[in-house]
Length: 131
Image 1 (cartoon, rainbow, N blue to C red):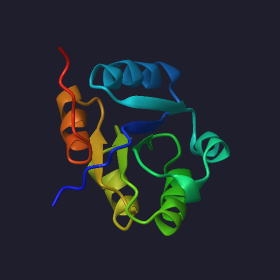
Image 2: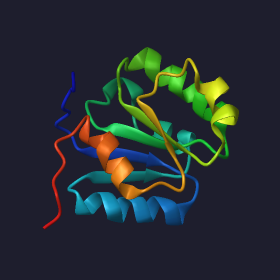
Image 3: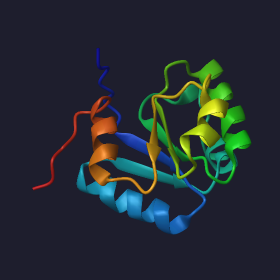
Image 4: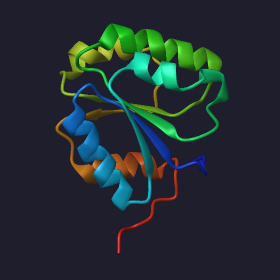
């Protein structure tokens, strides 16, 4: 069963500013609001984990997998079921073991085909097709 979330905000956590900006521009085409953060700490500083009402997280884990794992368990405890997708260029064995018990909705391999990202998000949000 698919749960539709009405707040179409995608919180992108990626230390690579160019990647974040490219994702924001791409997601904007599909009607998503995007908020960019350079790291987990920046996201936590700007948002109360207890007050997240909708949207989802899209987090790059390549540079700080341990920090992200700690954060995932924090958000999982405070916002059970809050949608989280991870982006990684790490091999499945490198990331897979560490992420086995993490509360996530999916892992998107980088470089990714944009259609894969939109497909993942469409399980949560009604997706607006660009004109």
